[in-house]
Image 1: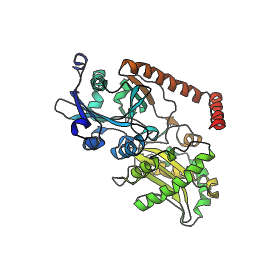
Image 2: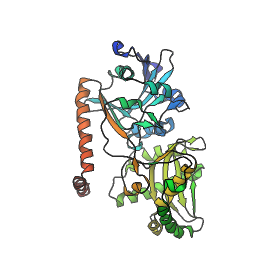
Image 3: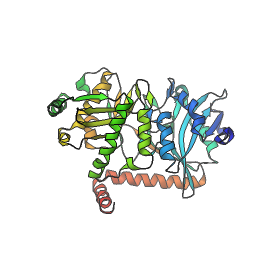
Image 4: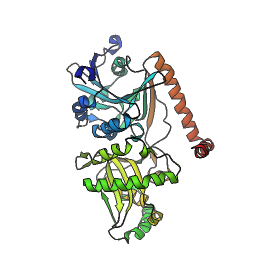
Length: 393
């Protein structure tokens, strides 16, 4: 692919409205390799992004999963008059029912979706900047379907919070931590005592330990176990096995093995003994926040001692002692999440039409998501939907 085919540069349109905008050029990059250097630059200090938008997480997702789903890379890079990058939007373009839809890369594997921003620009952004950012996309995109966006990240407003918003289908339970606070500020003493008495049974096992996988051999061994056990756990709950979808296992292995600082792009926390792996939680960390991505626990009789909850306590204390501000357990309000997370992350969806065809699509997408949310919130409707899925699934 030539550079010209991979990248199209436009002078931002809508001159009457974008005079106040610092955005002078918008590049559309359809080859991830051509975006890599700039993308990695946005992961350095002085920029605003979530760990779900790292190149080493989204690049293998696009190559191994997105491509199977018919999603093509559509990376949008905004620059100022001096050609300095101001923002990078890691979009994937999908086509269906005659509508071209741009979404964030990552599909169902990213808890939060956000652009990567120059921090100073993000703090000053106005509606005219978003006009200048989106105008050059209209030739190739009908609608932006931007879901599960945090309103703020590390105390700073998400620039896309200026877009029209609606509540997402599911919430995200959040534990806000006081950096350097006492253990009881994270998990109550009474809950700790309950977990300690359960853990006594596990502590009797030879080689019982909590650790974070550091070596490639450990990462591979724990993932081999996860991909054996998780399908059985999902079948038990009559849930579809998302990990069996094309490319997903290879994508997860790639991100878990990719080095980042002292850890990995996805870190694996484990409870195990000499004879078996008892539980794992894997997630992304960025120095201030830990976000859980996937987990499972043993099929043996040791499952009765709540190893997942015990492991969660270790993880919360680990990051609490390191001065982290927050920890979340992913989208969805499962009961175990509420044991630890009393707050909710403020997240929103936006459906932004860029063409007249996109206007109809945005209305349909918005209505569909509102309907799904209504079903989730109405317990009777939700139970009925679950029963129907089990009957016909």
